[in-house]
Amino acid sequence: MTTGPDDKSVGVVRLASWQVHPVGGTELPPWLACYLVKINYSLLEVADGLGIPWFEVALSFPETVKVLDALPHTTAPNRGHSYVVNRYANLVPCQSNTADVHLPEQDSAVSTFGVGTSGVRWLHHGGGRRPAGDRVAWVVLTAPSELPHLPVEATSRFNTSAGDLHSWPVALPVGFTVDLGRQSGIEALPDSPSPSGGRQETAWPWIPRVFISYAYDSEEHVAMVRAFAEFLIGQGFDVRIDHLDCTVRRDWGLWAPREMRNADYVIVIASPMCAAVGDGAVLESEHLGMQSEMALLRELVHRHRQEWTRRTLPVVLPGITPDDIPDFLQPYCADHYLVTELTAEGAADLLSVLRHDPRSMESSPSGKSGAA
Image 1 (cartoon, rainbow, N blue to C red):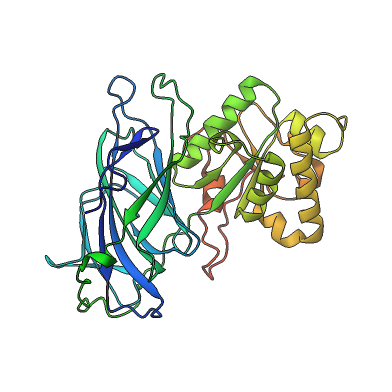
Image 2: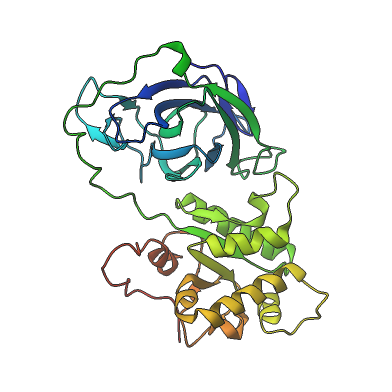
């Protein structure tokens, strides 16, 4: 056990002690060490005991550290499962009392992001409000063999609609270090038996990264866009929008282009001001942020039309019409996506596109939105 993060709060989440164990028997070069880490955290009581619709816990590590696998990752609440670490450092389901990892029953769907990178995030969502209480997550990660302590930066995002939390929907990062145990003489986990000998057979579910671009037409419009973002997060998508990334002072002129290029999809929210900016019908001194985003999107569509026509999704929220989509996005010659209400039924066409896995060789879904 390591007390590195013990009793540290980040937003509505409190971190508890972690459990770290070296892993042997993996096919890794000698300059890398592999670790299995049990991460304990709790959702705090908020809003007079009411739960919140969703919350996210994020951990960032140094660039020399890579997350090879992470749990939980579920599409719905489910009973507990057991896993072993195979020689490829994957967490593979098994039926054994001597498994390396035991996950308790999950009270919600949990989407996991960051496998293969230097950070990991767990988004708890779906099926009502999340009750306060303890949660458990696991990661398998690699680090340089000589690294004795693991620096970690933790943050959280969360929904604030359940009562007045007097808080932003994000939290300032909390830093700490975790003892990796290499100097403590801890014996590595033994080689796992079958069925852990092979590669993990099931691919991770497709979870797209979505950037939302919108104009500040009015306070009511901004509130509707943010409610739409909350809806997509509740559906388990990796959503990037300005008000959920405001924990530190940043250069938004660099942030937006980076997020747009890194997104699997850029959702453009139709509105009269969005159309005016996209079609160049505003003064150069007005809506500068939106002008920059639309200029970059025009360039990307012009240079890589097939790719960015696919990746750019014009969305029409209630009270808006397709006429409020910029002309360069072809509101009628190409598809647009009508969201009649913030439900799975009201956004069915959009959700169908977002959930289509491009790794599949199958043809794209036939259901489309309201292209004329």
